[in-house]
Length: 261
Image: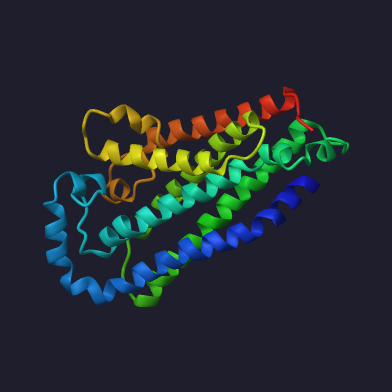
């Protein structure tokens, strides 16, 4: 488990930074709600009549003036993008970083098989993604309790669980891509996460792209859909299978590829 603990230690700084930024923004948004609640009714009606823009961000399905509607639209986008970016960057740097940093030959001289080494790195990534999501949930839930507002906790927990699954899926996909590369490509990681996000917006526009719901994790980790009671289980299952498949491919490919010195 030496590699596992080393990867955890290496990822702590990034974890704390991303958690402070994303979680802090969640807390600020929630803390602003009481001062904006009185004027939210008019704003909600305005946003609901903005056509495709409202549909893309789910503002036509939620009451933006309510706490859950406000949380779903504002905090959902912050956590969705922030969580996906963190998972993508973490997953992308695990395997390709060894070759790009010319440390692969040092790693592989240890009495640990390639697959075991890669599996320990994958496990560390899963723990880091889990830790970030738990910290962000604590930020959001703690601020809701602090301002004395009432939330639908079942929906809130369901959404954060979906966001966790999304992070694990994105991390698994980037882990699989990392095994194919000779050096880390953080631009590719950010680009992939952004592409999946915009696919989610395209699905919300209802322009005949429903098949993308089986591709992008933003279809099931979409706060407005979850808070509105829309079933997303089958899309979450598909996403989980895709993430596991990409992670398994990364383990298999890394075990057989020629490692560059």
